[in-house]
Image 1: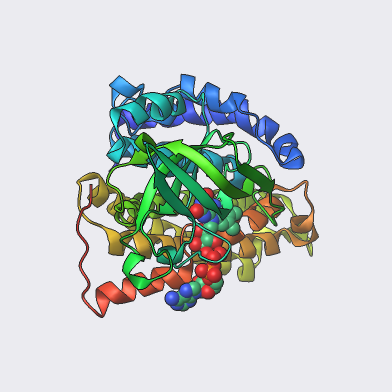
Image 2: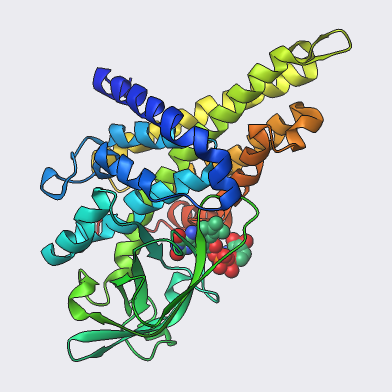
Length: 390
Ligand SMILES: Cc1cc2nc3c(=O)[nH]c(=O)nc-3n(C[C@H](O)[C@H](O)[C@H](O)COP(=O)(O)OP(=O)(O)OC[C@H]3O[C@@H](n4cnc5c(N)ncnc54)[C@H](O)[C@@H]3O)c2cc1C
């Protein structure tokens, strides 16, 4: 009921693109732990990176359902690393520049990012501050018409091969007092090849093709004009954008779970034991019935949240619930599915093996399940209200 003929046609186009340009490269990109930037350019040329943005910046300002279709299809690439690279770039890092950045920043960073010529990262998490965003310690001190940045970030997707980063910094001193906590954070765009930036690639359990880096900033100088929006307004920008980030994660989690189920159904009809297809064993059938039900139910909740989001409603509660439920669901589904592959589920040649590894981080990245519960509890129990920032 949410998708019209144009969305359906768009889905076919994206699916064909992923089948031709992405899936055949998956094993190589995973093994090399690197996705070549050419694919970003190809996606830019297809208009896939600008669905949210107006034409003047190279986008198409399509309705949100085109994004939902796009995210569902990239989640079917059998590579959590690929969908992360693209979704972080488009729906997380550059969204801030579009929403609150100056025209100069839009010309310099947003347009090439939408065209797929520059890869973007979002830098919030630090070695000593993840869930507690207000506790970040990376500083940006003003000297004349420049910010001088010192500190480090970790677990940054697109951080090693990326061209620039939307960086959360403390612009108010003292950096470690409660008074400078949430109010003292600003978002600043930093070129990742700037002098004083050093990057180290991190070895991960899954998402092998995605580059995840620790980045150090040592007296890195950027023009004051690289500030996004208001100085000391960064925390509020980040909090608002968490809605779309969590919704994006939820859409992709459901699509990934659905793909795992599809792969498993094929196998159940092929594999035999005790003289019959394993699809005939009741223990398996009931488990499949359970996960199929859960996927279907959560899909509709996520779609409903997408609808509310696209109408401009504040959906902090719904997005947090969607992220919490679908990330846990995807983990459970993939575990169950792998079990039905028997020993083959543990073998790299079978896609379910990578899916199982990749899905694990879903309950951690982009806000842990515990933090989702904290947010939901504050809304449900303490009646905390959220309003729009942008
Ligand atoms: C592969 C990967 C990619 C990532 N990409 C990015 C990126 O591009 N940009 C970026 O900025 N970050 C990124 N992250 C970081 C991610 O968002 C953080 O890892 C996450 O927010 C958790 O922070 P942390 O790891 O510091 O854990 P911590 O905050 O130290 O939490 C440790 C444990 O304590 C729990 N906990 C913490 N506070 C509470 C509380 N109040 N109540 C109950 N339990 C609590 C947590 O749920 C967790 O179980 C990425 C992480 C990974 C693994």
